[in-house]
Image 1: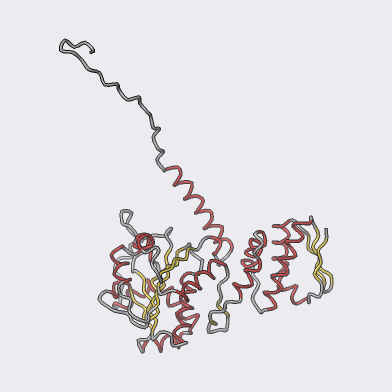
Image 2: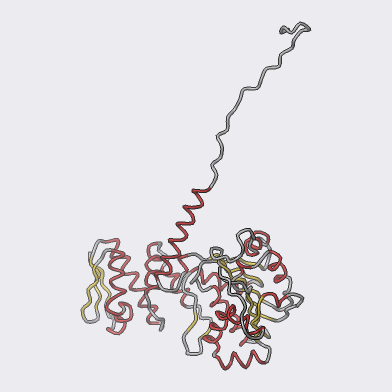
Length: 346
């Protein structure tokens, strides 16, 4: 069986095949086909089913390249997974959702269906919980949505916060004033803002009080109106802290709470405020939950494999330690016996 794509410029072939044909080799390996190019023609050789899927993968990647989107191994693998489920058109709808551009001009878009659902929930709801493993873009996409809302005058300021808790280490005394002490905990938020806004714009708006980056403890006693508020690393909040934070919200505000249940730094006997909130707040109007998975990881492909391996390990461990239900034994009820005064049965 041979499937053919014609009229494909060499420049587009380079884009969808990758450096040293990395992407083409991944398609061949996954679908067990052979891809051959000659001038402006691409041929896929193999069995009928895999050939048709490979052609649809290549067609989707060509459409993405024609839009100016960068083709990388992550979206090649994701397109392969969608084609297997006959949902490759979803990849094009995901790619069409432009949030904003970074300071260097790079477009920021959702890259998976899970991320697209997350972004849509942020647009449509007042409070959104984005829960999922590392590398799924929870914080970065929320930051992009916050900056976009700020630039469009939908909110007057951006407030970023996270609990100041060590990641399993005791750092001891930190030198400097209070801001210098908490900066290391908030550095990931600064990094994302620098990339999206630029250091100069960020500094100017922060000096004006229009952007605030602060530890969660600073939120107590405040009412936050007309603000885009992001609570990061919410798995490290206590139930009391989470309730305190959620009750700070005022009129005209939008809130995104992000967290990864698998990376808690709380004491082992402490319940996470994120876990409690996801149970308590289900079904309330204008509150949405986006549960991202390993399929939504957009970092190096190895990160996705690491996340999947840990999920499988934790699932096996949970089954191993899950107590088995004791076997129920049914006993025949004892028959009531009437006895006479001398002890014999009546």
